[in-house]
Every structure is written in structure tokens, then in C-alpha cells.
Length: 534
Ligand SMILES: Cc1cc2nc3c(=O)[nH]c(=O)nc-3n(C[C@H](O)[C@H](O)[C@H](O)COP(=O)(O)OP(=O)(O)OC[C@H]3O[C@@H](n4cnc5c(N)ncnc54)[C@H](O)[C@@H]3O)c2cc1C
Image (cartoon, rainbow, N blue to C red; front, side, top):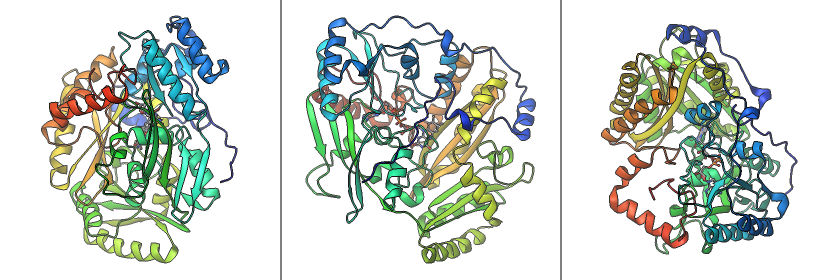
């Protein structure tokens, strides 16, 4: 496989994404903020003015780490440490803006090979230094903020140097890629060979393959290409005890599938250093279009019928009335505010004949459920703006709004109840504090048996926005649990969802995970407190 040189854009520690793509707020959003009583709040501490404590890792451990990866790849430079502090949830950003860097790693270590990763894990196990596997750093669930008590320091293990293509098997349609490779670089490399992974999460500009696998990511084209965990056919895991190589065949009956133990393990069992993923030919045709439904219920019926009886588009999403009206998640597309109804996006990729047939049959289903076609331009506008949403968060925070997202998944019969319960819980908790919130929702991923709901919450920031959000997040978690849904569909568990996740899998489930961790990571250095309590 040939290599393509791609510029990797480094994010600032406190602002999302490529600065060249930064945007302002639309008039509709500003109007909504006014209605919510949003006013500009305190000015943030600039990253350059943040004061970090000196690195805590013992000198002997640092020397051993330098011997493992080379001195040039062990950094205690302040901006480097800041860039590896936590992830990109709104509380993460607010803490960074407030100058709270209590979770900053002491060192950033950049191994250049699988063997170097194993060596680093051994050094840190011996020295009692915690290790945070770090791919793209886009976790939004506290997956990069482990507990440091009881450790001699914290190392952020940045995997960015592990970004080489290893092999392409065009006959089997698999590609083996090192796990530190950014998603966008993987896509460019594969497309140069006529293939695509088809994985496009909204964090595409920052996230990496290892993070996709470790956090069970789902991309916007999941209806057509599947979730990332469905794409993984093999992987290599570095652990303090040595190497696990998994996936000798696409499927097997050789006992339980240990790949499934690693997928979603969020860096607590080991470090994924390479992945073999299923790839598909680059589609020859792409058609995206918008639809309007008279109500969320009517749209839900349409997307369920497509998910269950087909034909399934490659992209299938449905916004509720509030999201359609505010247009917040999709500032560049969709019907104008005030026009009402619910916007759905359908996208078809594949051979032109196949696209035409699927689209024709899907159109009949959508129309039978009351859908009104909005044309190709509204679908194209969504496609063009599909990575723009996260760029709205910084100007919203600057304007004095609080904005955060959360997601969950349940069976079709439970979707309306879950949506109502989460909306009510969040609005209740924020309303009680005198900051009424708007809660927007869309169906983001569909399956034969159920769907994922993605919520965007916005309100005026209180004096202490972290204290303001905590009860609302707890209320949302409780509502998700009470409705019998999963605490996460694709963001993962991290530290933020650890308690409800423990309830979800029960005490025996937690014990199983702890036992596996104790085997692979006896010193407990990998992401302490992430996924399961110590
Ligand atoms: C603006 C924004 C939009 C997002 N949109 C989506 C979306 O559409 N779909 C979606 O699924 N997610 C989304 N996310 C969440 C996030 O991007 C995903 O969880 C993603 O999979 C994380 O990848 P990463 O490379 O950034 O991983 P990181 O954030 O670096 O790591 C995630 C977790 O996995 C661990 N880890 C990282 N690399 C490895 C490795 N090689 N081996 C073992 N453990 C490892 C880390 O320690 C951490 O606990 C979004 C996040 C943001 C900020």
C-alpha cells in the first residue's frame, strides 16, 4: 500500500478541531440563545497562562522510558502535557478553560513500535506509573482522565507514531493498519487503493483507529458500513504481560471470541497496536437527500421499516421537531426554522444501478409513512456540513451557553419512552436550577431491533457550569437506566458512565472484567478507574 503525506492538524488544548474550519453562530441559534437568556460569561484562562505542576514520574522510570522509546520521544513540555489532558466533553473543555489541569499527565511518551509499547508497559508496571493509552484524544466520557492516587505518576502513551499501513489484502478485502493512524489518513490511504472503511464519526478530524476500536465507535454511515467493532476482523494487543494476537479468521467456533473482550475495553486491558479491518470498494455513486415528516412518530415508523424490512440506506437519520427547528446539529442544511416537521436524511452509496434500485424502493416506504421529499440539495448540505457541528460548541460556550451531548440505545418498542424520559429528566434538572434547557434529539444509528438516540442539550450557563451540569447528567443516566436502555451506544463508558455501566452488567459482570484486568495488567497501571472501579 502506498503512503500519502497528509497534514495532521494539531488541535489547541481548549478549542475543537482545525482552526481553519472554525465557524460562528447562525442567526437562528443566536435567536434561540436570546430566548434562553444566555449572556456572555467569564473569560477563559489561555492555555499559555495555565500553570502545571512539575512532572512527578521518578527519575529512574523516566530514564527507563527513554531507553525504551528514545529520549526524543519522552516529553514533559507543558503544551504537550496540556494537549494530552482529558478529552473533549464539555466539562473537559470547561475545566481546561478554568485552568484546572489536575488530570494532566506528567510525561507524554511516543512509542514507535509494538515492542516499544510492551516495553513501556513493563517499565511503568515496575515503577507503579499509570498509563493512559492516547489515540486521537477525542473521548467525551472521561476515558482519558484516570485516577492517579497511589501511582508514582501518569504517562500519556501517545500512539501517533504507530500510523503505518501494514498490509492490504484486496481479495479478502481487509487492511491491516497500525492503531495510532488517524481515521482521515486511513481513509485517504485506502481510497488511493480503491477501498474505503466507510467510518465517519463526527470526530473524524481527530480520532484514530485504536480509539475507534477501544471505545466501540459508530460512524454516520453505520447503516451501510456497520459500526467500527463490526469492521474489525483482527487486532494485536500489547499488555504488561506480553502480546495477544487475535483474529485468525473472519468468524470461528474456536471458543469465545476474545476480540470482543478487547473491543470496548477502553485501554484498561492493554494497548491495541494494530488492527485488521474489513474494507469495501469506494462507491461509484453517492446520493443524499432530505425528507420531511409531519411528526417524529411518523419519521420513526419510516426509519424502523427501512431498518427492519429494507432497503437500508447507507446513511439514515431522523431529527425530532426541536432539532429540526433549531437546526443546531446541522447548521448548513435542512428546512428553515419555523417550517415545522422532522427532517430525515437518507444517503445511498454503491454502484449506480444498486443505488437507483435501493433509493426507489426506500422512497416508496418513506412516502407511505408520510415523508415529503426535500430534494438532493438538503441532503448534500447535510453531507457537506457533517463535521461542522462540533465547531459550534466553542462559540456557544463563548456566548455563555452550556451545550453538551449524550447518547443511548434501546429496542424500537422502547424508543418513544426513552426519548421522553431523558428529555424530561434533563429539562427537569436544569429547570430546577433556573436555567431552562432546550433538548434536541435525533435517531443516529438504526438496527433491525432498535435504534440509538442522540441528544443535544443547551441552556444558559450558570456561575458554576460544572455543578450545574452534574445533576442533569445524573438525571439523564438514571432515566436511561430506568428505561432499560444502554448507558452508551458509541461514546463508551470512561469514568463518566462507570457507575451506571456497573449497574447495567451487574456485580458479576464487574467481577469478570476485574479478573481479566488482573490477569493482563496485574499492577493495575492501565487507565485506573476507567470502565470499572478499582
Ligand atoms: C466532537 C466530537 C464528536 C464525536 N462524534 C462521535 C461519533 O460520531 N461517533 C462516535 O463513535 N464517537 C464520537 N465521538 C467520541 C470519540 O470520538 C470516539 O469515542 C472515538 O472512538 C475516540 O477515538 P480516539 O482515537 O480519539 O480515542 P481516545 O480519545 O484517544 O481514546 C478513547 C479511549 O480508548 C483508550 N484508547 C485509545 N487508544 C487506544 C488503544 N490503541 N488501545 C487501547 N485503548 C485505547 C483511551 O485510553 C480512552 O479511554 C465524538 C467526540 C467528539 C469530541
